[in-house]
Length: 361
Image (cartoon, rainbow, N blue to C red):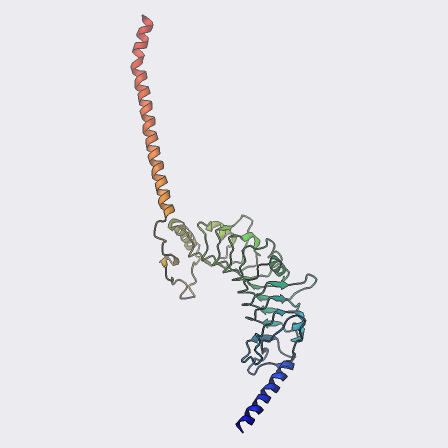
């Protein structure tokens, strides 16, 4: 009897699973306009399951399946237009953590969250117009192909773009040239070393550049970011900064996070004094722990710096030694020059009478 029950249960599971491979429905508990679907194996050219979706569904959210009967990895390797049409072309897609390698942007897509994947290519054919306003590609460490970033520049309706933790070391100079509606841009956690603010669109209100390797921030006289309110440059390699030029470039700046850079105390003091004078915050007062320093950090005037901030580095000692030697050389030179001049003056003064007497004789 127990064996018979097990056999019946196995048959039911097989029927359900085989039916699931043919038709997929929104999971129970899905929101009114949001359909939640388990991920599945898909690569271009493979058969796509049939989806039984309500006509009023506006967004698809993929999640890991609760069970994996067939032992597959449930990897959607590419989100392409074929799969998009099979899903009834929803305006919003959330497809995360599936090791996806390629994203093809459909023309009607408005919201795309493809974070935590392995995306290396973003396909945006040039002969189309695109409605995409929100694109999240955070934690795609293979997004280093220049063509992928160049293609993003065709998404002219973008308002929010997340490219943090994508191993980006350089930005194409014209990447943001046509993104005149872009308001929020995050580039944190990359390998950027030099940033020219002139390359960013004037529409930005938020720009995150923290946790990079930026040693130079170029602010030219022609740079204009008239709407920028929030700029984060923490955890970089900045040793100096022209705050006056920056504020002239971004007159609406309200929050400028500058801590955790290798700034010397006099330089940091000058920056903070200028920010205070212009009523610009340098830590987010709406977030209680924003000014709380971590281990190996010290708190100074509202910003967190490395714990060696108050210690003199070997370069500082070297500067002092060079300055001291320079002063010694200067004093020695003055003393030597004074001695030479005195000797000449003394010799000239006492040699005059003898010269005159010899001429009379």
